[in-house]
Image 1 (cartoon, rainbow, N blue to C red):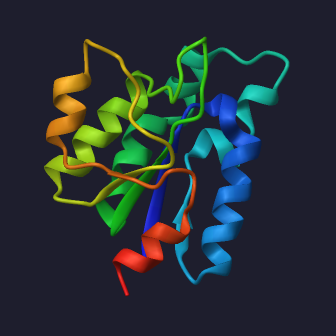
Image 2: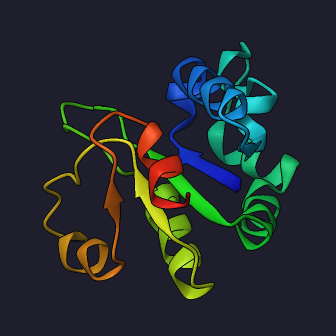
Length: 138
């Protein structure tokens, strides 16, 4: 299966390990360009300018469209357990629009301003175990 990973750039190292595990399971993984290019690690990193310069939003939507499913790596961030940021939320909507299965690595966060929408997407929670993707699609 072709899986597009969605995440905060802060989780680049963790996401690369998840991608490697999925590839060993036989999946093809599409990573965000910011993770591939390690943008957050650059000394002059400006998140807004990086998105403009790399056209990352358009490119990631194209990856979601080509994928069979998305995996949101929702590690805790900014004192929010199982954080889903603005971009990951938008990418979840895009996947929902294209009728792609949506997985989250961890349970859904309690973020009142997006709870209803996230729950309406039919998200499959993996509870930290990517093996659940393979089991559901065997």
